[in-house]
Length: 195
Length: 234
Ligand SMILES: [Fe+2]
Image (cartoon, rainbow over all chains, first blue to last red; front, side):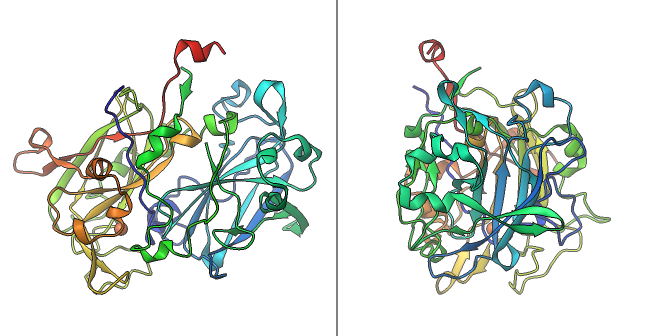
């Protein structure tokens, strides 16, 4: 046993934009909401949605972070093949007007437990005023047959699974668009995970 | 090294709903979190190298033509895992109010002055021993609208990545002896007394620089400990 207790989480508060999502400020962003690079492998897509609170109001001051594999299911930092690529697999979006939006590539199937495949998915962290600790969820895609056998989706009761699956909805700037709303509380509350 | 992430360590994390902090009332999920065994998706995480962070990003007093007003301070510490092993090359991002208690954020309405020489954002990477250092000014307390006469204790927001998606954390660093602690529902959203104390920096004479700045020390433990060999071989 050690006495190295974890640093507890605290809310991101309302005033993080200058440091973390400085689109409106004169500060260089470390990560933005466009993950595409010349060397990113995969189908370019837009992933977007609204964020609602338990009263049905849009949440205009959240930060959504995503972490994802490329079109071949490879994570930067893990896959040797991606050691020298510019694709980072990480992005941040504000939710001004209550909407998050990413331009990225669609992830491929990802290695899962005991040789099984995980369905393509994007890992999501949500921070906001009034959120004491990061909320962790995933975005899946409706047009993927491996959703049927995905071990994580299988943990989720049938009637709640739709809260994790983005639907294909036309195009945006010529890119296929996938849409998934996030509901922090209430009817159709998004499934959040603990790992 | 294979890391494991025991969930017991999360016992000191704040609950989603802490009603004294009013914004949590409509923003806290009511359904229980669904537990999952970490996969490569959670055991990996974004990597930021030297190319993204400039050496000047860690000195918040030198980002403008003049020096900011306020009490100059040096905040330093170590980032480590639950075994106490240093976490090198870990990204820290900070943001804070100026010495008068005002943020540059466009929606901060507190009638305290902005400082043209202070923006209040910084970042750096930990060195090989997990150490980091920021130079800044001590932030002021500021009022907020949570309840009548509500004031936040002076604090610096800290954001850390660590080696995986599961080590990511955002927290706040406080200053020792702040009289506002008992009245602050955000500080007290962490119900565990010992865990709350970990969010309070300590005054540090060793890093205080003569004729220059006061030193504060703030060590940060992120999730993760080494898997035992037995579990490794599974
Ligand atoms: Fe703050």
